[in-house]
Image 1 (cartoon, rainbow over the protein chains, first blue to last red):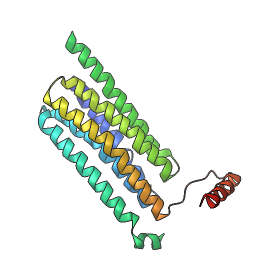
Image 2: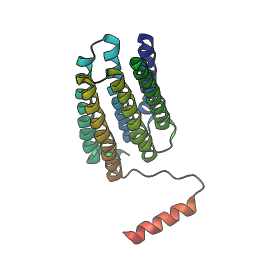
Image 3: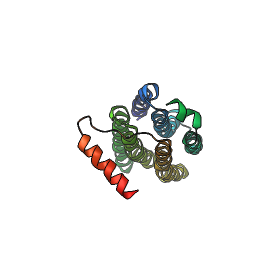
Image 4: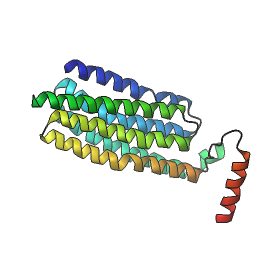
Length: 92
Length: 119
């Protein structure tokens, strides 16, 4: 079972790294924000699986909840900012 | 016996969630437009995370940590689509153009006409 958690954690890290291509090559800033949000949402699952790897699941599940809240608030704040940004509109 | 059934169900759920999240990641790379990529990021990824965390909760059993995981599932199911919807609304207010297939000029004319009539 230990080997299963190691394998799934490595697979999840690879899955998280895939949208990094969209962050680097996205045509607009909204594509980059979307890929960052998707990566952050998957990181919640990754933190929970780290809890199984280190046998401290009670601690890591609290970290995962806090990370979920931070990801949500950060995404909304940046979306609000770019929704009313004048400089970005003039540039593109 | 009971524990092996529990472990088997947890393994199946975790692997299913990983496959679903892999499909979502490939969709974020492969789809042609921002508005189409929101589908891959909001719907498919949310379902993948829900299945993965539910598998972890099944592996944990009836404990306080499983309750916290269910809380995390409810939070992700509520907030992840909402965050991406707010991002898509910001892009619409910003004026991001939607993507058309290269040989669909008649569809574009129809859409422009319909928009002019409704507005």
